[in-house]
Image (tube, rainbow, N blue to C red; front, side, top):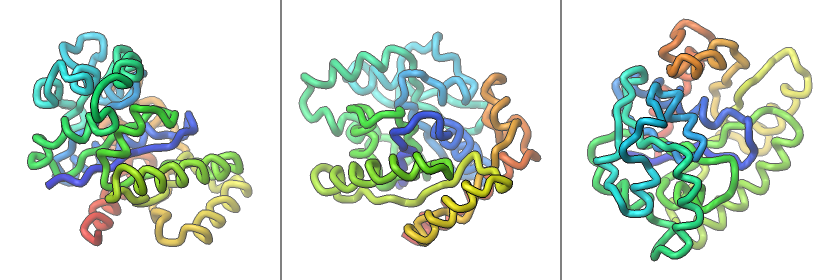
Length: 256
């Protein structure tokens, strides 16, 4: 049965989608069966997986509002070796439409249930806000992976996110827990980043993943080719880091 993980951080530009796409590809490279759910109306995880978001017959939007099943909507990322529940701009309308739908917080959880036996991992790329879409992701998940840059303001936002996760766990999803914090876009030459990294480890201990994702040009280039960085240049430092992160995730899940 699949383990479901949200990749979440309400701060934008911290590498959520890069992490979602490359973790999916990194796990797939290690023979894991992976489903990536794109919950961001920008559809960047969809495009980064080599899928044209403008040509979709069905998307996660149709799944959430009950017009299609997850089996109908999923597509294959040939580049990444995993399946995708894709998104496009239509998903922005789901925020409004879900307000009047029963059990609106658990629509995604219900939709994913028939698929869980087919996968080892389900990864949910959440939008950069604490919205109804993010709430659906958190209600469906067993745990949260928080990618973050080692900067001062990132620490400020982290406290808000941790409190939100605790509230969701207390009221809607008792299984939800923080799986770990992933340090991304890391530049060891910057003293501040080293200091913040040390503060994270001191405060959160083994909740901080050992893997550190470096700032890497090849990872940044990959989406323009419709490829995960792991597929675009497997030998790059960024790709190798995400493959290592995939191994660490597999080990962490086995220990749960």
